[in-house]
Image 1 (cartoon, helix red, strand yellow):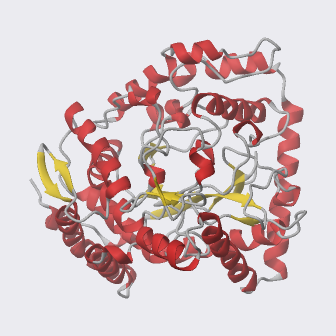
Image 2: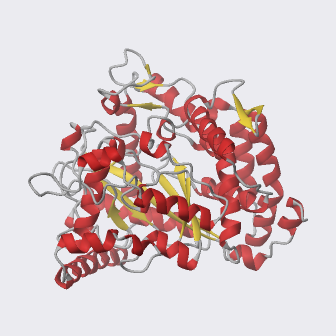
Image 3: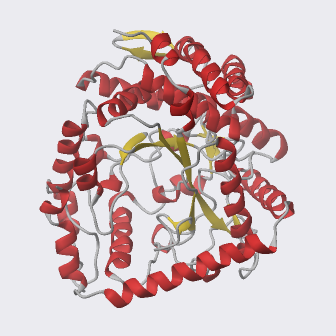
Length: 510
């Protein structure tokens, strides 16, 4: 059986050149006061239903920016920057002037029911997207859905479903490394947990910020994308069949608490798309997902079963508030190296015991990751987080060297060296820097900290060169997306309820 060094050596430059990465980045639209913008998604940005790179996520106020799949990190970073530049130009024309919030944890929020759900027009697919979000609000509360992050979509030629699932198992084992290195949400606005039980501590008097002293990513801890209902899901990643079966059951099993909510309220308005444990596939929260491009009207689970895994979606990355577009090129390079390490390393099958162990490790790394002497569990044995992380990064060195040989230069080696330096100096992590700046420069005021960096990001992006041809291209994309939305609305040939029943039918899952 080949070893990790042999597998690395077997990677051809051509194959590495075929590696693709793309970004999906969420961010809230906010007012200069730091309050959530409650205006509709700006028409000048185009249709959230059909635009290829500018849409909304949970809330009408939560913009999602999407790059294509790129051959190089620099191309990906360039497109992400360009989309940001256009969006900021539109947002500053909004009433009162709006900007993008640079923190993963939300701005000052209104009452839960006042947070606006995303709207996608009057077509059946558009209405379904809004009803799905209404369901999320009923199930988890609207505040939880305003958390924002970065998804890193990644693929390598010649990788089959079994290998992608092996990668996913190793990613889940070593996800704590990324939480430690890149977690940037150790504090939040007290409005986020109002009326909820939590274990956060006051920063200063606690009126303007709550935190955990050694947290890396509250977003990925118990306060983030968690739910008691989904805690009953023990999804295995030992292969496509088992994963698909687990998801199929969650999509078809009635869940009493959601049955009590009902699909429609007594007035006939929709509460949710369905009453099963998951309404649709995207409701399943995880640190990483197997993905396949879907055809129009196709369910994601059907696409996976029919055509296998096409790429993975890394979902645990916080927005970096110190960077105008939320992620650096070096962070992307480290992710490339890390994902190759997950792919090429031995990956034994997971077990229910290990799945529980990994969930606990995730919470420990998210909530106490920088704590000196913190231990995680590795196959039933205690191990220092820093020792384990150092082992993983050391094994990544030949992978970084191989990528540099394929691309030219030393950028991947530099990114890995920077990660190792961060591991050795907890005070240099983004989470520690956020807390230090909050206390030293912003008088323990989370909103003041995030607002200052949001304004700085806007000013930097607005100050960069922007051509008439770039403006024209993005305006044309926006106009075309609006035309496409109108065409979809004109083509509807079923009442919404009939369309919903067909879309949610078990046979659609394959």
